[in-house]
Length: 155
Image 1 (cartoon, rainbow, N blue to C red):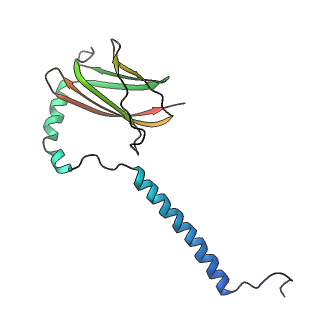
Image 2 (cartoon, helix red, strand yellow):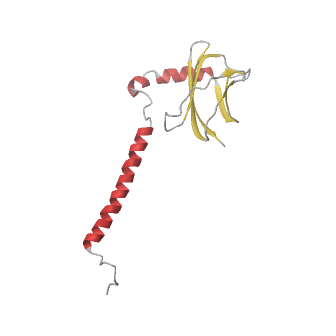
Image 3 (cartoon, one colour):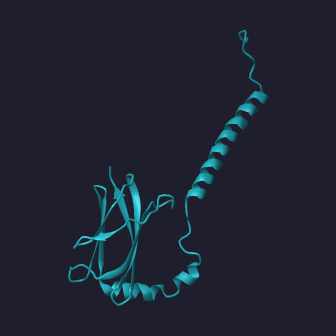
């Protein structure tokens, strides 16, 4: 016996609840998928086949330099040190640095790097979390030097 004011739960009611719940779940999933696809750049190069041509040769020339790259994000400052095999600062030109998030291009920027005698530094005002440092430079002999370094900026 149903108490007054309550209706009996019927098959139509259960169907309405089920359809409503799955509609919400599917709707949220579609929104999340759209946002994920919209914010992820996903494109490293326009044509991977063309980019792969000569990759091994470029890599061999870069490795032959024997350079070591270290990067650090501390106290609002980005520091990049590139050293040659004997431990002194590598002689390079045309240094271009891009700092950005791994999953979106929205926060990418090119900090203004300056040489302080031991490495390259830039003041950066960034949020905490994971960052990618992309750097490109040329050796004195014209060899292209490229590195991608993952960094974590703590609060």
